[in-house]
Structures are given as C-alpha cells and as structure tokens.
Length: 208
Image (tube, rainbow, N blue to C red):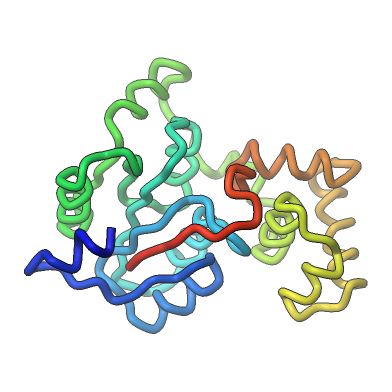
C-alpha cells in the first residue's frame, strides 16, 4: 500500500504503526485526513482503536482494509466508526478510489459484503444493543489480550499493571458477561469482533 500511495501526487503517507496502541499515538500526533487500518491488530484491535478515536475531536476519517470477507466484521467496523470498508484483495485502483471517497466525506463499503449481510439478516442492528457497552475500554483491551493467548503476567507487563489488577479486571469481565473461563471469553471476543485469531501473535500494519 505504501509503495502504491507514495507515488500519487495528491496523497502523502505520513507513517505506519504496527499495533493498535501505537496507532492511537500516531494518529493523535499527526491527525491524518484518512486512516487505513486492519480491523484486527495486535495489543489493541483496530475496531477498539476506532471506537476510541471517534470520541476525540480529530479530523481523521477511517477506512478499514480487511483480509476477512465476513459481512459481520464489516458491520462491526461500521458500528465502531469506520467511514469505509474494503478487502485487501481489491484492486489498487479500488483502494485509491475508496481513499478519495472517504476523504470527500462519502461512505465507501464493500458492495458484495453489504449485499450478503442484507441477504442474511436485513437492516444492521444498532450498536447500542451490543454487549460491549457494559465494558470499559480497559476491559475490552484485556479481553483482546486474553483471547490472543497472553498470560496474566504478560498482560500486566504490557499494560503496566499488577497481576492482581489484571486478575480483578478478568473477574469483573466474567461477571458482567456471565462467562466462566478464558475459553468462553475467547469465543466472545471472536463473536463480537474484539479479536481474531488468524494472525496469532504476529504483527499486522496500520497505515496513515
């Protein structure tokens, strides 16, 4: 993507981030016009990053470029604040067209996924009905890290918390969501789009 975009005279690539936490810092610092991101990122998911960014007074428009052709994930991205959604297998011309549309304040969603979603279930449900609304930002982040296979100690080290604090958050999450263990927590994270296991603990990229 960078190689493609940096040669276009009307576009400038300001930088890249390798995980969701770095993404938040870079976007807040540079305030790009358009953010390209995978909805699935390490440490903090792209979906959660969008949820946080949309509450801030930033000029940035958000365009998801995803590997997964699941219409439910597109719906999750829309509910998280994405202004557009396309697949990584789309053509370079399609990517550039989507960037320009989103920059012009026009939504751009993958038409094939939209048709498939509407065929399955009709009008998208509002985000207000999502179980995510009973969780804090920290709890959603901890859910993602547990779902990605990190231990309590590793999560504590990453988030600069004590293991006792992480364990307390985990118990609060179990109580709120009526879950019994990390296996059920992982299933929940996959179902609502907080995490995906297809990248394991490797690194995807977010470009802006």
